[in-house]
Length: 134
Image (cartoon, rainbow, N blue to C red; front, side, top):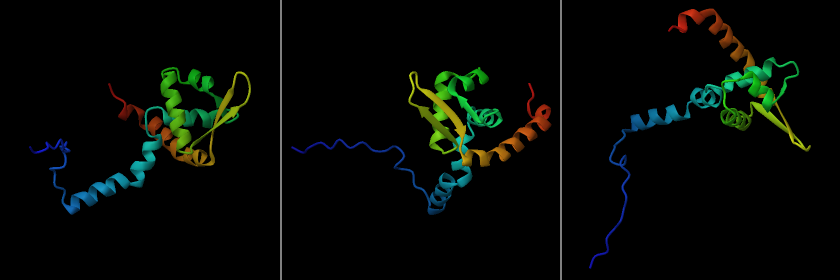
């Protein structure tokens, strides 16, 4: 009796990429613009960065950010802050108190991004009626 082979084939394995296509795909995935923008270009990240930037002290607690961003759920805000921290744009400071106090602020890298975000905001104000149409 022959033993049956239970191999599962990758459905994409039959696709043949030419070296040019492979190179183009590889360059696309490694693109610095794509990699960097994906870290803060989502729906909530730029708003969080802006809120931290415009706060008087440059420091906000989670609930302060949540009160400013009323349409962002607690889960999404928490995930956004974690992503920004992992990307070294936001610093998270935990104080050993009861209950624990956690504060968020921009890192030097986050602060260096703000002129570009402010330029984008200015552009958005100038072109709002042209871009946002019903």
